[in-house]
Image (cartoon, rainbow, N blue to C red; front, side, top):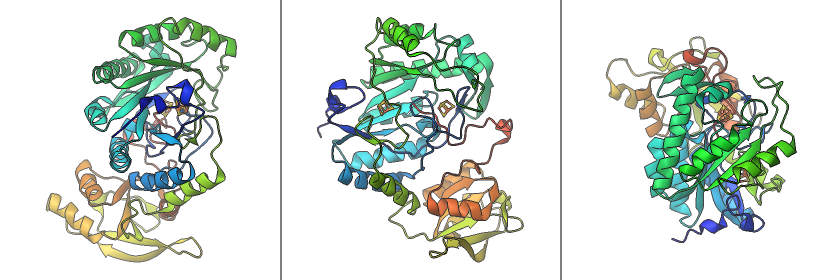
Length: 424
Ligand code: SF4
Ligand code: SF4
């Protein structure tokens, strides 16, 4: 295997006009809430706001990659940068990386993350020869961090204020240290937010340089409506340039970052072609595991209209298909659920009942049944809303973040399960 790290167009200025990158949008959820982020848009930490991407399953992403390489053979890097955080969606992220590495042994692999939950996956990232990781670190002082992050959800616990910023910072610095110990090239992004961290970014650069970061990227904050920071103006280019002069005392600077979309492809700075966007669209409509023939979607519901029943309470599953001519879903049948009370066997039986379904829509599900069903190739989505809207979403690959169920922990409407994304 020959992986040439100098071919990374983001890390190596000299190769950015020759080699292209592709972002595979497989990570919709996020595990933190930045005050500049509105989840109607892609994550700001790596991507341009205002561009909502399709979300692909790992197998759909591999199919899309095959097509993209046919159209754009200069692709040297496959990256995962959202639209949420790759490690708020670790199963999807790691499976995608495994699939790509198996099929493309020479490809550079790259991930961009907020750093909160990357640590448990670093060993495997190294085994998969993921050579480049981007961490977005906006503050190394929890007091300043507490102004930037509304909350952090880590290991099923919610943190706010300085506790949130502290947990995030500790995770980020520990991850950076570990990445450097195992020889991964590490870029650190810092979003420059006037009046919040602009005077602190140099301190971030100094801290991460001491831990071995390779390159630093000062990204000007984007003003985004309906966010805590919506009244903060974007930094003047001179402010960013002056911060770059400060931070380059500690680290080489990336100055050509184009804030690409979470589904960007090709040479940095070039727009995605219509042809490639069509391929992305097509991939998102495929079964989530394209090799399998799974024509149906199952749902749990009390009255047959809304997704409003926990999996454990369901006595029947409603099975839907899509009418290819009208592109409308229709109810195929109702299937009885296996009886309750037989432990994991019950969920294996559910998997058998739904073996021709690509997804199961529920209003609630425990970790254990979810794992059994996912292992049996059934995607389990916890949603609130009208069944037909979600079924159309599954078959068309449409973004369904407006239906993703907000857990009780995040009932404040700031849940990070949407289209934004933890990023990079
Ligand atoms: S967002 Fe920046 S670092 Fe990421 S692919 Fe685009 S140019 Fe490279
Ligand atoms: S998606 Fe998550 S990490 Fe990215 S900007 Fe939004 S809240 Fe921050």
